[in-house]
Amino acid sequence: MSDNSNLSNQMDLETFFSVNLDMLCIADTEGVFLKLNDSWTRSLGYEIDLLEGKNFMDFIHPEDRDEIIRRYRESMYDFQAEYRIIRPDGQIRWIWASTFHIQGDGKNSRLAGIAQDVTERKQLEEKFRESSIRDGLTGLYNRRHVYERLEPLVDKSRREETLFALAILDIDHFKNINDTYGHVAGDQVLKELARILKENIRTYDLVGRYGGEEFIIVFINADREKGGELAGRILDIVRKPVVHSESGEIHFTFSCGVTDSRICIEQKCPLDELIPIADKILYKAKNAGRNRVMMGGGP
Image (cartoon, rainbow, N blue to C red):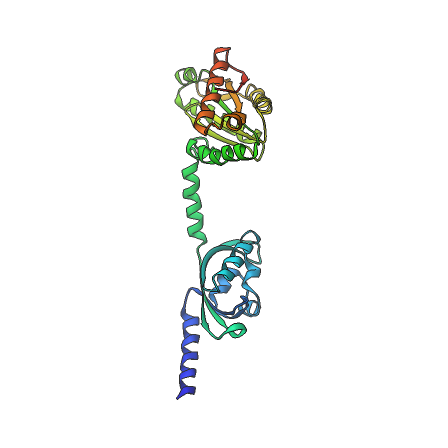
């Protein structure tokens, strides 16, 4: 009776493995595959006989591996996680995986695993996330996301006394551009400036659309003098291009106010006090004749 029961259970397992569309496996506690169904081939791109005897950790993306291994061991092998895997063709896929103990003790323990390819869901989530943090017209970060990124920078600046420069710039006579050439042309100017900003900031700096014709740049590891120098280089570039519209060629410039985070260090001021300082310096630049970068600090 026991032999028949074991045979029946084995047949049930074989049937379950063969008809299930999810990725199923049996593994030891080290994560070595002992048995897999064919669904793994579709997602991992390896033949089953090449997977059996291999450790699932070998297929995890290097950036995810240490964290997944830590969670796997801390959970005593009963865990759920989402992580990236690398196929033999170099393609990266996201999978959701869950493992649980099914039999044995110690080195003889066996784990069952189930996994699903969730790449499309992750891509959709990333698309939604990007749309929530980007300005729809220019593709730059929106104001809310810039604030979210600035908060930890302010905290770090106060804690470690490291500086960053903050610049707010405003397109000169933008209302006149809209009135003279139309709002479509005005949008072209905004997009052209956004392109120039993206292409001419350093890779680790932060740029966003602050609102209307205003933009904000955060120059990492820079004081106001360095920030002013970098903003000045961008202004030199902006003075040269011409935006072509149906109503004619458009030349444009911007005015810019630059401050830095030293006031956050000296006076422990919050972020909502730093930005108005840059804004006041911006208007000093406008009142001084526009088409220039000015620097300053303090309330």
